[in-house]
Image: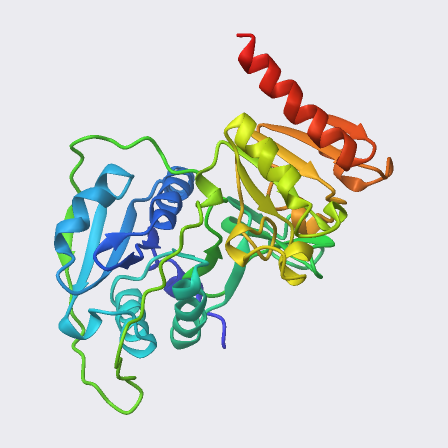
Length: 353
């Protein structure tokens, strides 16, 4: 991948967001990315453009306008009815080559993790995955001898080396600057009621070939699990809970306080709870009003998924557990004794209201 000449780089303008839709419904990550795109565009004095790909999706453009899109590029074709790697890659790569965005943001969903790397390879640029912070600044961050410091670059920050350090990455010599961002990390704006975006219809043409998979059947699993990303109160358990049966203590507490049970990766790996309840770097990023961390040591990978909670209460028998470093309140002791007392105390307080 060769560097672009400065004159070529200057042709790339605007902050673009891949507006993921499934079954003609915009995914929440699209609104979150538009919120961040507005911040970045403000620093670059640029416009925010959403790229909407699908079949019969034009009517969704106003939803994107309400959450911050100045323009919506719609690629609409029967070949795009369901997500398939090749036609969607062709669609987004064609939009990038035609309209030349300076920044391209993609959600790190199952679809985005498949689409983003393929598009970046096709348009010959870099991609920083699973970003937790995006900002405009200088690169290198500190001026270095004999190296030009470039301004107004997209600085993409993400955990590295298994979450044990943080890396800030830039793509100064190629365009677009591409990043994927996990759901729940960025904040969507309050909707601007009645907002309208300029809608641009663009179709690069689709000729099915042997790279186009054929979808024989779509089987949808019905899940009764509550989405922990929407919960205001989470009661989260780790390996220290001891057994799947012991999670009954956490469920009782959650019931008493109107919360939802979640867990750490160790609990999922042990088969005690399903993956959709996992909080952390390889699970979901959550921002509840209150987060109970019970029997959770506080590895950096877990903390990355819950440190933005408004109020964190930790219960652990190890007084040196890292979770206490991020907790607002910490209780050192046996959770088997503490959690039932806490549950009863909450029930009593509610009863005596």
